[in-house]
Amino acid sequence: MLNPQKIRKDFPILRRRINNYPLIYFDNAATTQKPKQVIAAIEGFYENHNANVHRAVHTLSQEASELYENAHEEVANFISANDMEEIIFVRGTTEAINLVAYAWGLRNLKSDDEVIVSLMEHHSNIVPWELLSKIGKFKIKYVNVNNDGTFNYEDFENKISKKTKIVCVSHVSNVSGVVNNVKTLAEVTHEHGALILVDGAQSVPHLPVNVKDSDVDFLAFSGHKMLGPTGIGVLYGKHEILEMMEPFQGGGEMIREVSFNSKLQRCSITWNDLPWKFEAGTPNIAGGIGLMEAVKYLRRIGMENIKRHECVLTEYAMQHLQKLPKAKIYGPREASAKCGIIPFGIGGLGSHDIALFLDNYGVMVRSGFHCAQPLHQIFKLQSSVRVSFYIYNIREEIDRFIEALKEIEQI
Image 1: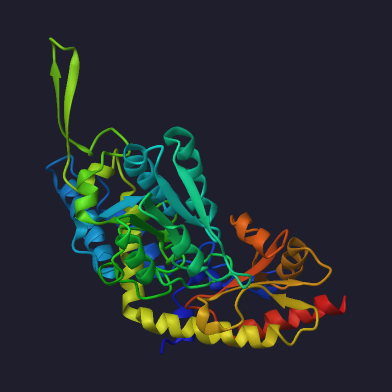
Image 2: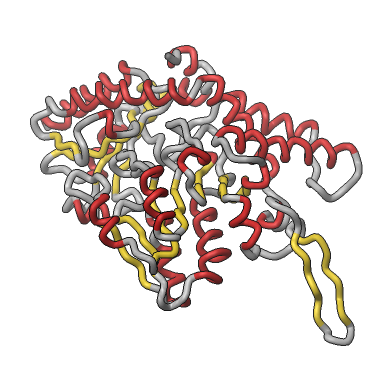
């Protein structure tokens, strides 16, 4: 088991006080705090190795290039990809999904085709497909969610067909914390000759993820939700699929050669090798190095330990929330079915009111619809409050959170 008290010493921000109370950070599904090791890695790059990558023979460029490539290797090992060529660095989960939508979908989805999307998705896995459908004229089929927020596997099997070209689904819901069986979904998807894109923004930071075992075709996730800096994320794609795809953006780095034909007045272009073919322009080098350090930090702790720690906290918090007369938990009540996320409400109060009240006691939570309005419609909610846990959270923080909620109920 991990030692959260020891881990907390690595996070400078946890020494802050908010409104004269010790900071309690329960908004980890939105972004996580950064350990001093990640901060030092970014600072060390800028102080000692700062240069552009893959563009010069001088020492600094060679050092920066090696660090940046090592970051790809570290991430590949973390999710059990075959090699670094399957790891594309992007700005985050949103850009990763858009990359698939436009680099693969724009060229492969026709008017008779269908795309399957679940109703528990973050808007980042809905909006790109809706935008693209206006160009490609393909049909989007939405898979229903059960009343408790769980994925409706029966509806999925009823809606998938030979017309389906890609299935887009979250591994873990960012609202309810429900964990979907993506391995089973991948099996059914492949039986119908389609591809599967998994939003791993809420799973990769919290669970052991093995892309070879689950056999997903694409996996998108963000660095800032797993101790890394903002502005860096990952798209994993199977080598053979990435090879056949056209680039998402054009510019430097993603090309091998550009030659001008004076007779035709055109340039002929050959693409660079993977993964650089999809990383146009100067990349977020420092972000990649920060993400590498974050991955190393998580691997030292162990993803199974992280999963267990969050499950214990989730169960503890839900037990106490259920005892509050006016509190209502949305989604499954079993901690084992969730991944460190609890959405709830207090009767008679709006979610922002609850969040502001908790802020007075130094407790940071998320309020609103969490970029997932369709799922809130299923719950028949305008909004909800969301608490989400991570490696540095402890039971004593949950106790203070519950005491604050008791005061809200009394008021």
